[in-house]
Length: 426
Ligand SMILES: Cc1cc2nc3c(=O)[nH]c(=O)nc-3n(C[C@H](O)[C@H](O)[C@H](O)COP(=O)(O)OP(=O)(O)OC[C@H]3O[C@@H](n4cnc5c(N)ncnc54)[C@H](O)[C@@H]3O)c2cc1C
Image 1 (tube, rainbow, N blue to C red):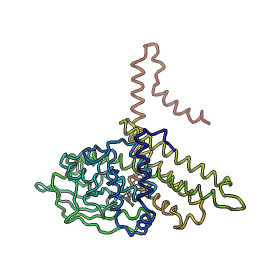
Image 2 (image 1 turned 180 degrees about the vertical axis):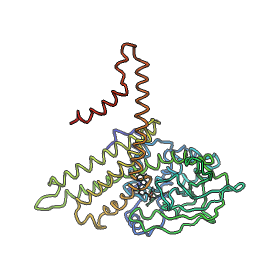
Image 3 (image 1 turned 60 degrees about the horizontal axis):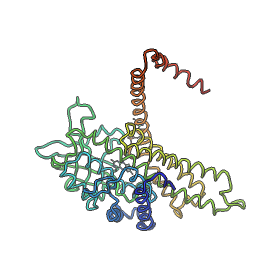
Image 4 (image 1 turned 90 degrees about the vertical axis):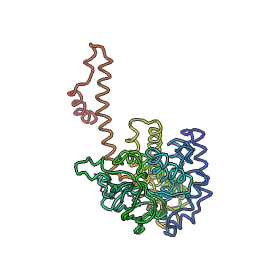
């Protein structure tokens, strides 16, 4: 449908993933996941690996495909049709891989990244703690250096793959100097599943079931010093980098909700009320118009963010946060609209709309809530505008002849523009 946006290579990948989704994953498997009969979707992960879909952006020498972000978003959109738990299992190598690839040592890449992308290992990320997820830098899980090991104690919660993963990337507090800045207090460690690493329980989740989400407890876990990813106390840098795939894959997975909308649209073409197909009622077909517009806008923003990251654009972080918030909120509206169009049957398990609705609600919460995305967006934009205003003025001043300098804005002019803008609009 959006082929004009893709290169031939991306189009082929998208078609390949679409075929994979149709042929490899049965509705019966999805139902078992939703019924909590699957603890972790190993079967799906194995299939992804066989198809070499675990490391789309990473170099071939580590088992990847060396493609770009647009390609990964195109693939994630297709996988998103399967629901959020499988979308997450698909995205996790991109997230954990980002940390290992950009900050890991060559030994870590050989020992963890390569077998992970090749499907021999499964990983999970442990950031959130019972004390809170949004205030990430307040992490209290401790890793104390003791000779050539760290000793880790603490708890993480809502870890997808807590059950199922072979190793975890875990953010821990390593700097106990009370005067240290919060950005210099944490480090990222690779922790193998083993003695002292416990999954306390699996949550009874509203959606996203079958992904092994649990609380983790670390009791005196001995972690070799060489499992430190990046610099000691340098976890903030790794976190910032990891948040790009974390949020962009969240946005991309939500685009797959077109499946729910297509289903509802087909339903409105069959269902009859008051002697006509319900699609003939404007209340229904305007709902379709609103939904597809939302979804297309989300798609445009998400692919733009992907291109921005591919091009290392200076505003790419803001675009990623915008895409995450907008695509997840759009998906929620679209699925809710789809359920409305299907009436009572949409609320039953006859169709997968109710599962999609339960799944989608999570997307507004995880990988940074909508409120946290807003915090990021406004922060980045203020920085851009204030710095750009300065740069633009300086550029203008540098370029202008002396008799043209009066065209340059003064601070008062800027104030006036702000003052008069809304009045003019009225
Ligand atoms: C099913 C599931 C899977 C998950 N998977 C993972 C995973 O694999 N790994 C992982 O580490 N985490 C995971 N999470 C955790 C998820 O990222 C967090 O739940 C999320 O970041 C919010 O943190 P919290 O739940 O502690 O809420 P809190 O941080 O306590 O926030 C509560 C509310 O307060 C608001 N709030 C907080 N601070 C501010 C502020 N400064 N300004 C405005 N509003 C604010 C929030 O937006 C939210 O509405 C998962 C969560 C769920 C439910």
